[in-house]
Amino acid sequence: MEPLEPGPRLFEGASQAIRQYVVRQRLRPGDPLPSEREIQQQLGISRAPVREALRVLQSVGMIEARQGKGLFVKEMDLRPMVDTFVSHLELLDGDSFEHLLGLRHIIELGAAEMAAKQRTPEDLAAMAAILESMRWRIDREELVLEEDMGFHDLLVRATHNPLLEQLYSCLTPFLVAVREEGELNDRVLDECMTDHTAIFEAVRDQDPALVIRLMQEHMESVRRQIEDDRQS
Image 1 (cartoon, one colour):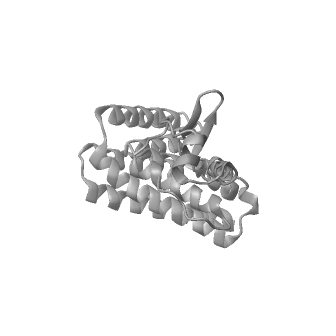
Image 2: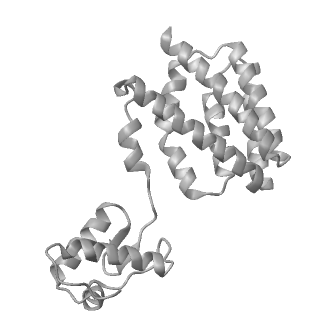
Image 3: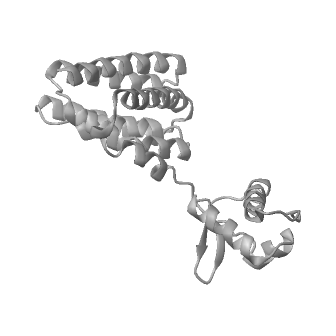
């Protein structure tokens, strides 16, 4: 870290310097940072702005202080940011609802494409198992919300992108609430099962172009169903 020039808001410069240090040193979650005293010495400033900078970085979830061990890079967690937006479905206006559906659309299309390229045999086995469970429940006219949501979760997990997984998981309360509001009749369930099976096969065959088209069609179908449920 380079020494900072004197100024009225030194803690902001210190905060930025620490962020840049993490990036330049390619630090990962769990890696240690210099001590508070070492940061102070490297930046050439007093203790107060360093402490304030560290408080800011802790509040945004970038670093953490472990009692008796020091400062460490923290695992990024997007959930608090997104949870404040999606935790209460009944408070969402029409625009916000559409924004969330649009976000889901973008995430799932991208995830489907990545999954077709990155999936492993273990991913395929997990998806096949959940589809088998879904068919079993449909045949017995049981609820399939868990399997329906689980298939999409596994698709995102097959991207092997932890940030994408976190972002998608933040939408779960919204997606569950939407599904619980809707009525899944036999026709809708059979269509969902058919869509999921086709998407799985495209992922299995590592066909990104096909899986994007299939996911697009599936999401359009889901959107129409949601709109019909909300208007009824």
